[in-house]
Image 1 (cartoon, rainbow, N blue to C red):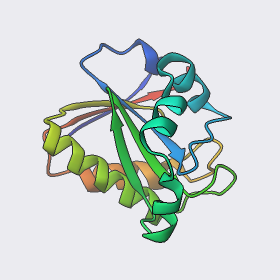
Image 2 (image 1 turned 180 degrees about the vertical axis):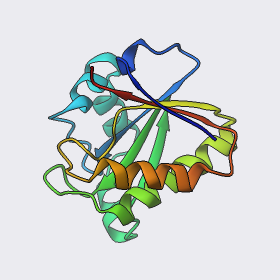
Image 3 (image 1 turned 45 degrees about the vertical axis):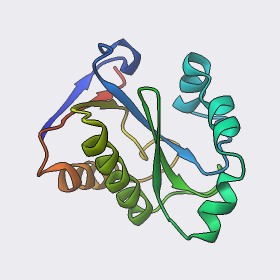
Image 4 (image 1 turned 90 degrees about the horizontal axis):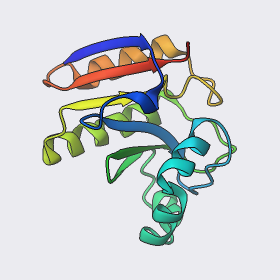
Length: 148
């Protein structure tokens, strides 16, 4: 794994990068950086149309973390409802699912914001440690785009 943190606009990275962000299983996407993902990629409508009833499956299966690839967007699902807060356990499960997708789809470059550390209130140091732990045995480049 190649891990970098840079002061950079996430949406300015080259198209060879897949973009990752966190969402809730209800696909609410009403606050934070997900609003920009929705504006740019119509992600809310696409996910609602393609995965009707997803939240019921998420709750019933007690997944506790998931990842859905749509186009070049990796949607890390870290909580059931938009008003819930993720746990480090749900974050780790979502990251592991993202790693599986990357292996299957031969994705080798991911850019993301400081996931879980904004409105979700996880400590960035803890999330960064999980990212490094989950991806340490891969050749994937992970670029963390921090606000300037």
